[in-house]
Image 1 (tube, rainbow, N blue to C red):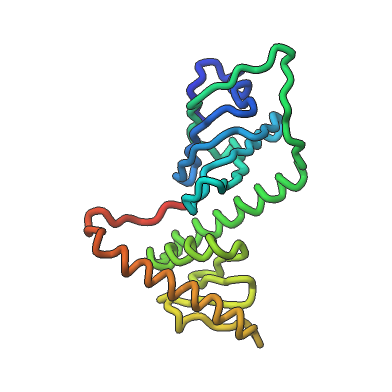
Image 2 (cartoon, rainbow, N blue to C red):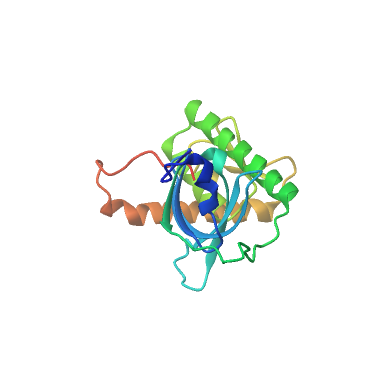
Length: 203
């Protein structure tokens, strides 16, 4: 991990509550937000970011393991109080560590999918579904949603199939998400030129 600090021994002292930081993860994702809490031992940073929905009254809360951060830039420092104490939110380290491990596993599955030859469209659909449903994984080149629905290449609505006896409602719900994804893609297509299209970033 890189940082703007010249002295690495003082690096983590900058993560005071209220500090504004910009992070770039090893997966290429970049975001900026306000530090809510930081655990020195596990190097887990909790950041409040503007919501992806664009609504001013909503925020996304991000848990960042600094071992997986490529670069950190301090946008705005907060001067610690004279007594050196902060009103920190309590951290459930066990729960946070579990989430971090799960996040790493999911990213590894996505990396494995990319290296096994999954198409750009498959990766885009996967990322689109994760914005609505958290329980999404890869099984080879197939996308598995909630352990109830499998989406096989070429990842169209008709490629959504129930797993086992399955749940018809779950399949229909996933199909609607897939249909909306392709509708949104079609609407955005005219504004994109071949030169501007690229492989989606891992988020």
